[in-house]
Image 1 (tube, rainbow, N blue to C red):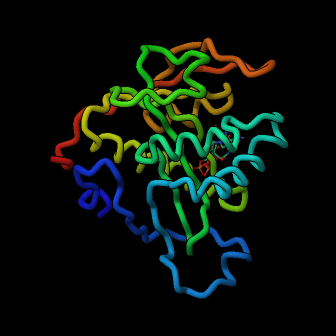
Image 2: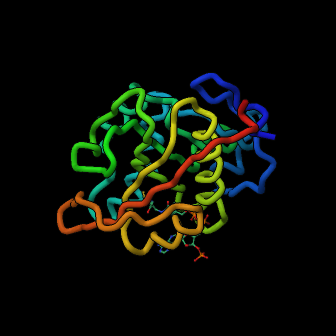
Length: 204
Ligand SMILES: CC(C)(COP(=O)(O)OP(=O)(O)OC[C@H]1O[C@@H](n2cnc3c(N)ncnc32)[C@H](O)[C@@H]1OP(=O)(O)O)[C@@H](O)C(=O)NCCC(=O)NCCS
């Protein structure tokens, strides 16, 4: 369904999912005036919602967010077409933010840079609202994002770094391990993962 609606435009046309909703009480109480489930590119107007989910997910765990609010605003301004948000009744419940990168491996510079018109996407962050985890949403959003990237002209691969405990999650999604990353954040070290986008005949 969604695949047919992804056209050659660099931006994703919003599309709707028929999937069970996670239902934190604040979402359940809303009237059904907004699409139950929608996937779309993010905009700078979504930055606060993005940052709230990110902060809850990372600050309590590691004390550091992958992206500061300024960086979220920067990437959503520079390359919104490399982001994807999952909204339920208008509320952001999960998102991915990416940017362009021009080297074989990710280096510290990649954390803050967007290099336009390159074949590589650096996925900075995938995060699911805490009320909605362990329901398959992270996996579904990741799969949709990779399918969408396949349809963007010129893209060949996606790279990310993750902590060791999430390597199995990304392997299950089709990523391959590239080895230890050169990037460190404080005491934290990471594994670099790569996903080859290949061609997709459904996009032509
Ligand atoms: C990681 C994350 C995106 C997964 O999304 P999700 O919707 O909960 O994941 P799904 O329901 O699709 O899949 C669940 C799988 O995720 C993996 N996973 C999620 N959290 C995990 C954790 N803390 N430790 C180990 N594996 C974990 C497991 O493989 C799990 O499979 P299992 O239930 O069979 O063990 C989500 O837990 C999250 O937002 N976490 C906080 C932010 C984060 O760490 N993001 C990734 C780095 S940028």
